[in-house]
Length: 130
Image (cartoon, rainbow, N blue to C red):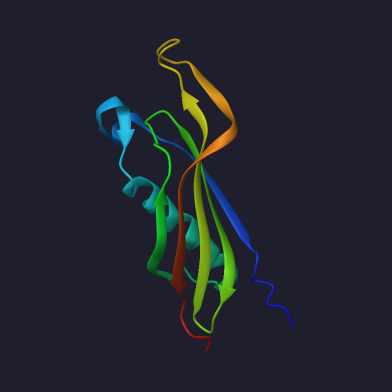
């Protein structure tokens, strides 16, 4: 019997506010994407198990491109393994829109294709079934 939770995918989109710029050039620190992974993982746990669950750990976190204030990012979690209390998630954070201050203070563009900025594998745990 196939577990219907396998393959479940949850996606969030978020505008990155300028208040989160941490470095020169309005660069946002990598912890910003990890916090978003936590948000999308929480929704996965709610959908699969009716509980917010807890993040147990990350494996193979890769920062492959910058995230800047003014970007719009898309964060996705897909369930790739279901244990008795744990779930393994493949996580991705991609920049789908980017500000263009070189054009004007409010200019922006849609990126096609999006730029994958962060990937990771995560493990969440949920309470035992009663």
